[in-house]
Image (cartoon, rainbow over all chains, first blue to last red; front, side, top):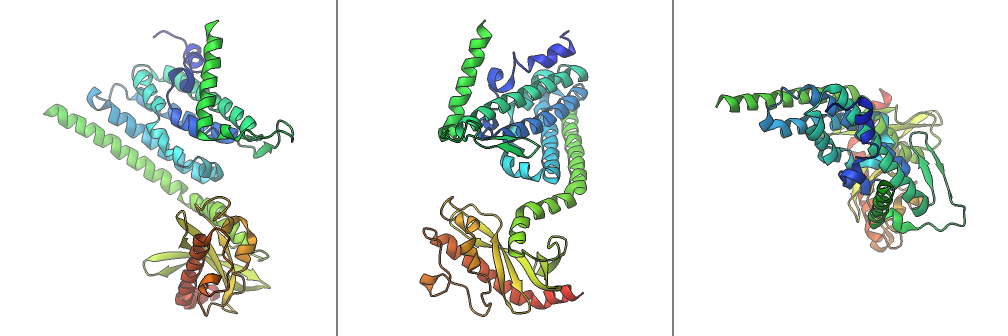
Length: 204
Length: 194
């Protein structure tokens, strides 16, 4: 309980990095990592929701009765998700078109509810912010890495988020894209490889 | 019993606050979302069929009531005259509804062009309705006096090869739009002059 702000923050980046270590929130991880832009966009939307819901739930943790805590958490999370969805439609419409149904699905993303239940409900506001930031950035990094890998090898391109810029033929024009990687089964294979690398590095 | 009432109250308060917050955000962003949707969903099709107009069709739009519905009508200015209007209809395609933006020349009473806004047709087959301009070009200058049909059904439109259902769906959508145009022409003219 007496961990510092930095410790709460950094655990989300490596030791408990959400999709790899906690193996939660896999649905968008598999579906939205076809391009770097989509992956990072999803990560940012997710981080925003996670920070806000962690703050609010941690503030209200003594008000919410145990018996109805899950419904209260879901109401809070769903509200923030809808707000993010509306803001995205208003200010980042092209990204909203790409992410589509996966934005409302953040509501049922286990990481957000998981962090609310496992962390924000037991800790103060400041550690909860640190936890949300770490988890959110960790999730964004994980999605970004997976997406960049799949996009470079699967399509041969790389689209950067937010700046509307993309490189064609990252691996040279003679590279034949390995399209299997941008298909859904390719996502599983890539995720498995990432887990494998993470475990090998973690053993030392 | 008191406990149950307390739980009930807390969840109610949560829902009420959440509802209030959502309504507020929705009101604040509603107008911007509408503009964004017009720009990104209907904008590209509008730009294509009203290419060369000297105004911005998205700004020069008005609503016309058609029964219970409100139809967004976009105007194009050519040669200094507001002589072209466009609105969106939907036709039944192979993979679902196809959104079709149809433009009419009000002086000549003919089609000024069609554009596809949204669709879920098969890539490489039906989706060519959106990607191949030559298919859509056939609708330009077609008279509104007889229904538009594909060639096998006795019309003049060459269907996309391998995508007859899509082609028929587009034609049906265009025919609907012709009906709507005939029905609302007086109303549309009133809006353009006023």
